Length: 376
Image (cartoon, rainbow, N blue to C red):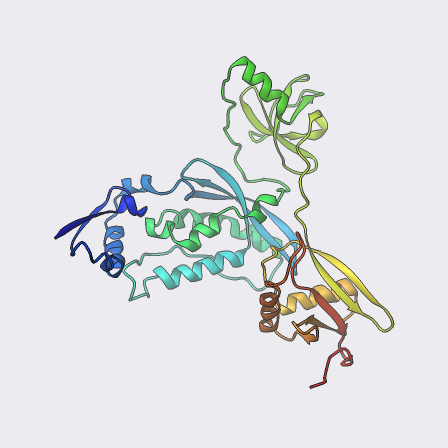
């Protein structure tokens, strides 16, 4: 008996019908043949099938700035503006090593050397790792090549755009959304315009929205900056940093210095996105507890050498050892990246507090072995 499977009803590819000679009662065979059918369909996707992709698929990405972060070690992140098929725009923060990890997965999955997968293509080239030099200069140097890399990556076949790791890379995580950009030096001005509304609706929106009144005339030095006259009421869109705001007036959008305006209604108070690492230090005579600010995601796993350097810097001691408490309450010394990974995994089962790493560090003197339980 001929049966037709409508991939629209399966939520896979709208409008594609596939026929197969299977007895109707044996729907079990659908699973057996599903992978081959999917592969065949993807190989024959046409350009117009792009319109059938989800609206949250990234279609362009551009580096707006770099920012220095103080995590387990000092590092720079790329502030990237992502635009989606559905028209939304947002910022994500990515380190070079995240680019490198994504590229490694894509080469394994879609690279020409993969002889077993029907999905292979020529992947863009990622700039190589740099081990020597000033971190900021290295980050600045990488911007043009990373922009070209992302442009080429988002021009690859649809099955690459739909890849889970690609989607996660360009997805705005909760950590990304909590960050406040310090500046957006390379970001072109947005062309948003205020929609025309009825007078009643406009009055309501202006009274409800964060807004400021211009104290002086301001003429920007670039297209990125907003021009306004004294007395103008500016609808506030975002806070760029402590000195600059973004707003809109008379259909134009741009940034401007806060010192030129009086805030009539401020933004809702934002939650501090800083995360904290709790450390217990065991000295010669006293023990202390210290919470250290770390600009890293709570789910991240540090390298052992970075963690050791951070603790040496915070406690001004070189002769220290790092430890954690196991399920029995005994101290276990950390000696490698594998030990740190084990500590992080075990802590995932424990109750956690907001903005506090679930794992705790116990810092002892390197030659003090009395802190360990040696009873069998």
